[in-house]
Length: 185
Ligand SMILES: [Cu+2]
Image (cartoon, helix red, strand yellow):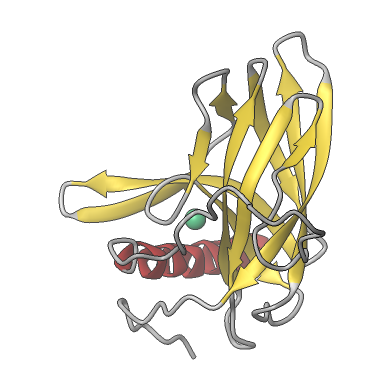
């Protein structure tokens, strides 16, 4: 019974990934915010400041909005580090399951799989984006609505095995993902 429900979840995740891939050729993200010229206090909502902890910098984290009937969605960001680290896990209060995934073309078919870890080194940022590496949020606890901030806990390991648990707030963005057009139910 466990096996069956896991299988169903995986099948759904693949479908969602396919939908993510389908729109990856469209411009998804707004142009990177230019250097702020504002001399006064900038409101928080516009350009997101990079989030930094222990030499790890997370830029522009965002989550694709998910309607109430959707069970899964993806989270994306750029991760830089001043020392070699690996992303070994993710947790989120918004989802019962969070995994690091890789997606790439296998012939004509876009396939995705869970990966154990994602290596990040100085000068070699981890780019999590549609059609590539991403964080898969599955068994969502509720709708993921544009305008929300969604909490992610990124779990890194350094080369000498030290854990870096980094909380990140990701913006939920309403990105039209109708390319695949598969509706479950
Ligand atoms: Cu995935």
